[in-house]
Amino acid sequence: MTSNLPYYDKSSRWSSHSRLVARLNQLPARSKVLDVGTATGMLARMCQNDMLRFFGVESNADWAQSASPFYERIWVRSIEEMNADDLRGYDAVVLGDVLEHLREPEVVLQRLVDLQAPNGLFLVSVPNVANLWVRLNLLFGRWDYSDRGILDRTHLRFFTRRTLLAILGKAGLEVITLQATPIPLELVSAFFATGLGRTIHAALAWLTQLLPSLLGYQFIVEARKP
Image (tube, rainbow, N blue to C red; front, side, top):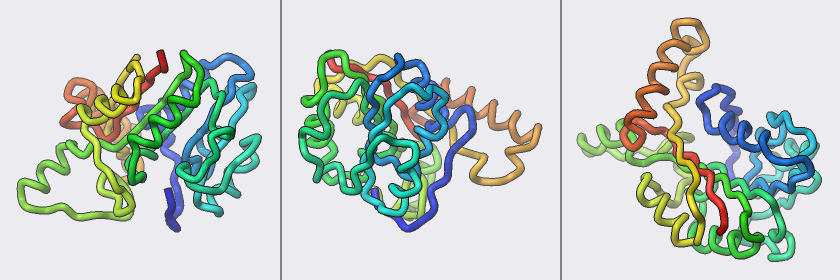
């Protein structure tokens, strides 16, 4: 992904960043992790498992430079331009908010799956275009792009729960878990860092688990190559 905007860590315990990091922390020591779209390196930086071996791909040179201290190697190019040998042989591949930025996400995902050994782990997150906020705006004839979020103007593809599962299945991945994250209220207002704000955020997170397709801000999938 390419942007001149600052990239913010989402530190809330309900965020995609926190949930991806929680899963990475469970990997065995010396596991090789390919982080596609490192941005400023928040996953490797937040990860408490300092025995993991992180490798990254990031097309934004400024972001890649910020991330570089946390990775054994970062390739400053798009995932489509990567050589097959550099994409092969990882224990885990992370595609955090990446697929929606690609012209042909099916092709990229299939290539990555083909290059990994059986039982390779894939962690994928994408925005949910069927979120209630987007649905309500469509009801009133509005589809307004923004600088970030579900309708980020750099998004080339859009996903619902069903279409995300379809693209993963077509690539030959077996889905283990699918989670939905609530809207990241901590980025909306400082109020949600207060006691009452955190309580409201927790309630929204609980409701999101009940109605993931309607209230989910992002979907996070853990899948494996059979």
